[in-house]
Image (cartoon, rainbow, N blue to C red):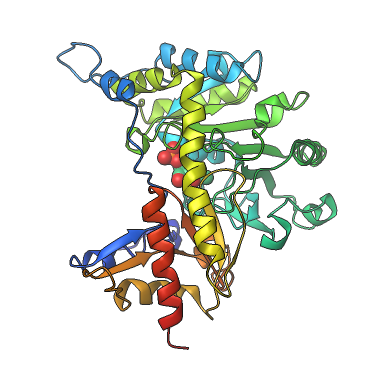
Length: 396
Ligand SMILES: Cc1ncc(COP(=O)(O)O)c(C=O)c1O
């Protein structure tokens, strides 16, 4: 029986594609630096709120989310972006669904989404579902993955371009865009009639300067959408609660319709999100200190490896590392299927996310891998140590 074109072209997750090979070697202790799943405990108040209420029925909630949850998220954003209210915020099933809603609300089949590359691999999947196309704009490790000048951006605009999408801080780059660049890009997008979709799921994890939210770009209220999530900030990836925010009320009305088609996000999870959004400012200081220690451990360990170059993340918890191997896809498979480090008495190895998955053309990114500093510093150090041992042993 025939499957749709979209089902046939949808990309396998570059981050998860080695999972099968890992499962086949249960005797090996794999250090998983491939996936953005932190081991930081979810705050107890968030866990407790999951048990909210005494209703005997797990009922549907409203399509745009519980009003209390929308109010909590709006108030949270209004601290930095005054005037944001619940009418500007819809609760989604993770930042993922907010991205899908944004693409679906803004793109017709065949429309194009510009994104600085390397980029979060699942943008491809959401674009495929929305029948849109991701058009990459190359950024470079040596330049800190900065957004290129407007003349370069212009080369990628066609009459099908609808969105300029970016993650700030970036996954997989760890780059934080400075305010001047964001304002420049917002102006440029407006002059070309494009929406800005700012993926801010890592906004609270930063090490140099606090990232500016696109909601803070005054004068751009009508063409900005922000995607937010409880996943990384509150170490609650399994909660599946995110937010789509925009001050464009005509758009928000259509997003409400999209939400009606899938009924609503899980109400208990929304109560947990409300508890998360009520955490005090010290929570965020601790969050940043936790990831700073992990990222620092990774940077120090990587700096000790000959022939490896990398970008020190300014935010999020990923780095793109350039490795002295001809093909990181093959090297990542070698780590999972062949290389074993026996120095501690038990077989150990490493899982990394090969670079090509973060590029539109899989022929690109063969010299880099993405590493996630999501585990405690000792584990991160050990993972990078294994990387060094594997690079030394790799047959060339
Ligand atoms: C840049 C970026 N955007 C969105 C998401 C999706 O997050 P969520 O768990 O909220 O769906 C992720 C998850 O890793 C991400 O890295």
